[in-house]
Image 1 (cartoon, rainbow, N blue to C red):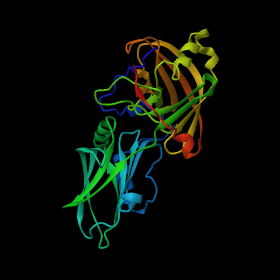
Image 2: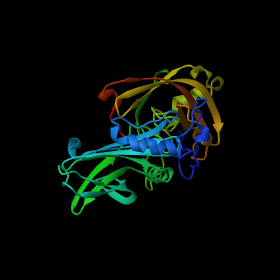
Image 3: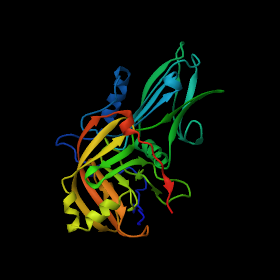
Image 4: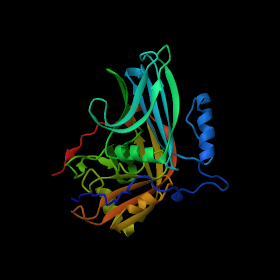
Length: 324
């Protein structure tokens, strides 16, 4: 029964440089003049702000109040390091300026104020709608807090406080039928509990999720009912029987992503190379030995397609337990 420890040395800012992203010929990242022009046109936009050659790395979204009664907040983070936010509010106190801050933690359990954004002035009817360009420094701050836990947005005027939890789609289930694997996927344990759970797979928070550029890494113990079949198969002809087989990963927004296995990498001492590509792909990782420091096994799979699925299929009931 082997444990799975992820051998990752995270980048200081958790925002890899854009040189790892190959852009089509003739396209350049957003320069200052392009950003200025985009800002001047934001009032006319009703969809996510994008520009030629710019790829979205992640989108956070949250409803302010039940059913978005008080509005919505969306943050787009680009591979270039910068981004945009879109805040729309309603039913607030008329003709008042609310402070806007990104917080660590949730609305119910706030941590600390991570980043202040420009305040928003409501109309005579208590509404407002505004886009803001976000610098790479501001996005670095958001990434730093987002990689250590949940984040939220708080609007405050005096005693009036409105809040939204900012979330994004995450992996919820993995099915590798060839190996008989069908597991819920959860966030790994935090705080002082660092040993991975049993009975589930987990995603690596510092990397990408399905639908985002880059590597989605799911890991689990090499134990019965978890990723043990991967380890056993890898010992037979280097795991070549897994090449070409399909893996499905379900996400919290009721999507199913299909991947095809392209490589079996054995006896790894590090998975740091997962940070060096923006090609969408899936890595399944487990240990080859009984300790967290043991060599690792990684199954690499290429992204093939995405489709809609049902809520029930993408939200299996998970029962993570502390391994013994």
